[in-house]
Length: 348
Image (tube, rainbow, N blue to C red; front, side, top):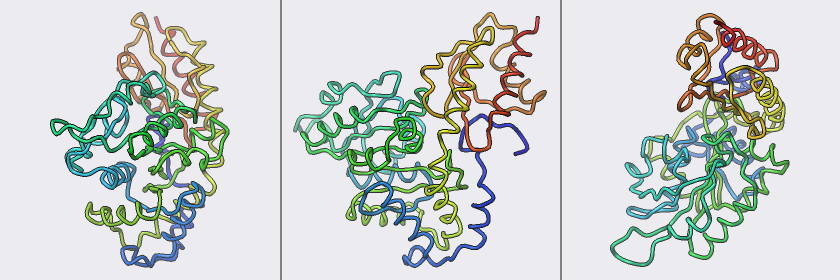
């Protein structure tokens, strides 16, 4: 990469193996269902997650929207964390396009809604209220230190969903980061949810695309909605080929990214003016702040890292930064960022 880019794992490039697979992929018309590479990707996703079927979609946002539209109809309500990606960062699509009413619930610093609060958010059968139809969760939690949320929390949400006859969708954009951190197979996590959206183009390095998984009826309706939303791609095998490598191979190497994230966290903890809790770094995301007494402001640090060190990093909230590790960030690049910050923050 021509820059050292910590802004997100969305900036990751496809690997050389992916580029070769894309160039030589067998293709067909996926809307007709005859693209063999797309079919292979969907079969692999279903097998790995223990679900009946899968659907290749253009993005995680589209995958979440399709899922919510299958589970909840016009005027129905979805209970969701107030800082969840699908609520804050997907342009309000669930309401604007899906006509699904969001019911945000406060979360803790791992992105978990209180189970009692979820239960309390479910509407009584009263014509004054929208009807509760869906619970949504996110794992790992991108806005909360990239936390890997344990299975007991998902089990509790499953129990509530079953008690009230609700569906349960997981925004699993980085679900393999979560399962790697928890030391479990992805199918163990998927057993608690009715559907999930899994991104192929973040830490798994594919250039584009996500998959949604669920039972056959869910995918049947999802396929129709995908077409309605403009996601009916044609010779999509050219990009699905990279997705196969993402699921099969890249999902198995994420511990390397987590180790490099911890390397960064430990190094940051030794730099003056930097505040970080390394124990909160569970996956590939590192959140830290710089004190007001530092010789440079957050904006100045960002600018000088870019202009003088060729390093890109994302600001996050007041005096904060978020650095995200991915395949193209190794221990070498982590050390370059640490050395650059030491130099900048030691200026008088």
